Image (cartoon, rainbow, N blue to C red; front, side, top):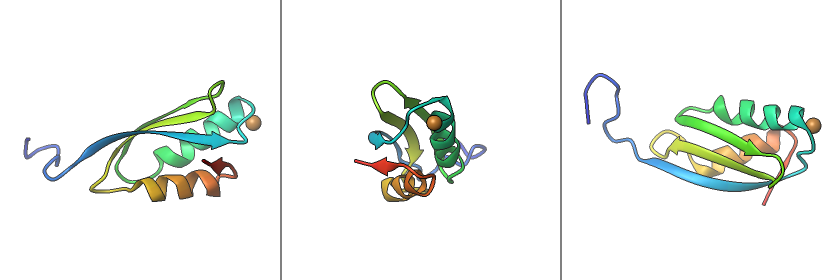
Length: 79
Ligand SMILES: [Cu+2]
């Protein structure tokens, strides 16, 4: 824990989310961009072939629910 990066109280989490409706590279970019724009999201990586989104986020700043909501708002189905 250090004082300069503001990591106090952060709870890093990794989740793998199933995302339906992604068919091409544009879909992949759209989902990654939507999720990366959320506060506390450290990384978002779509696996197009598997239809999944791997996301690293700080659960003190963002929630799994808000990540799923961002995916849905980008036009894709979670689950
Ligand atoms: Cu597409």
